[in-house]
Image 1 (tube, rainbow, N blue to C red):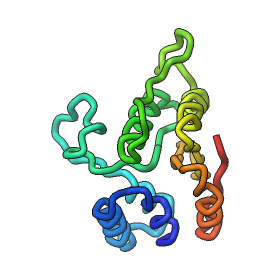
Image 2: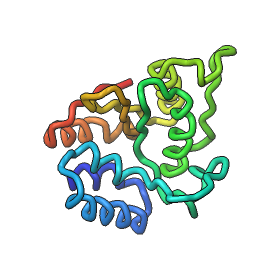
Image 3: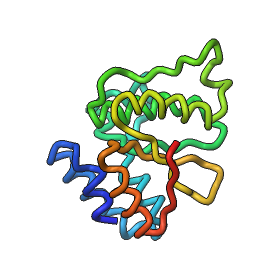
Length: 164
């Protein structure tokens, strides 16, 4: 899992990469499930009393967000998580759901993921869905040049993946 995290955090500034790797080491004692550790490592979820609008875009509140994780019916969470990942990876532009009059809350999660995946492909990234064994969706945003190496490392730790 260390090799996978190094590869996922390679595009980030060294200080941020170090913070994420330290978080992973701390979480190794808390959970044996590799997906839980991966999610908890790659999402810097702030502990706030009042979540301001767009807190995920504020580096002071959310240092990084590198993993999308939504319940199977929470399509409205896809947009903000893709925005947070794009901010962390310094991707150009801002992802906004726009699908011919259909509100994001009315969309199905697979449709929202496909829409986000299309936006990411224009930025040379792909959305890689991880098999969770449950009804939630967990995905990584990977630069297309790193995709095969990431998939090999995921397999080595027993995590199946599919492109969206």
